[in-house]
Every structure is written in C-alpha cells, then in structure tokens.
Image (tube, rainbow, N blue to C red):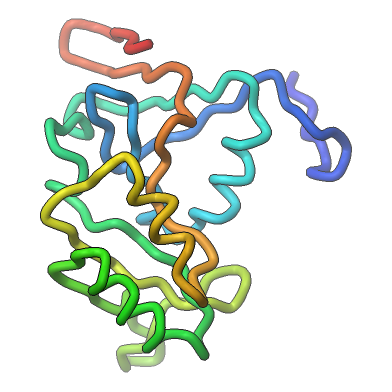
Length: 162
C-alpha cells in the first residue's frame, strides 16, 4: 500500500526512516557500515521527520566506541583525505575492503568512491562538518542533528527517544 516516489519528484518528504550503526543520548548517529552514507544523508536531509529504528545493542554512551566513522573519498584524493583525517585526530584509518574472485579488493560505493573506516578518540559536535571540509571527501557517516526520533527495540518492548 505504499507508493514509491522517484527521488526527483519532490523537495521535501514528510517522513523517512532508517537504521543506524550507533546512536547516543543526543540522537547523534553513525551510519554507513553498509556503504551508502551519501544516499542515506540525502534522504535524511529531505525529511521533515527522520525516524531511526534500532535495537538496544546500537545505543552507546560515546559515539565511535563500537564502530568507526565511514568516510567516502574520491580515489584520486585518498592520500589527501588521509592526511586531513589524521589532522582531525584520527587514531586509525583503514581502507574498507572485501573479497572478489578470491582476492582482497577495495569496496567501491555507488558513485565509484572508496570508503575509509576511521576511528577517533573523541567525537565532537563539529566532526561531521570538519570531515566534509577535507578535500576529496564526498560524505561521512556522522549524522548529527538529523534524527527527530529514535525507536529502540528492547526486551520490554519499544521505547522512543525524542
């Protein structure tokens, strides 16, 4: 009973929903372990209400404590982006790879870019913006200020965080 709209049909969507890899008490998110952070952020930016649905294992006190921040980078800018991320305090940077035909190859996004999985000792409210300011970075998996509500599945039922 749902109508699927073409992305170009409208500027603003009344609501959208998605999952997340990590959620903190401020409803800041890390998303993109599936490699689609650019498309997910475009959706989030278009929604008046953006609802995140997770189970309680995704709740963290400190963002970045259970998963790295995914960063989508244009291949030609890989070295530039790595230097910029180190300048922001990255403690670990790993090129995300997978297996194809029995060999290890980099994961390529829909747009033909690479994904770096980056760990930081602290995540500040400006980190999302600071990462995007690095030359060659297309997008990152920090979603600060996008989630209007988080629905959390627990053993006692579903609770809402607004």
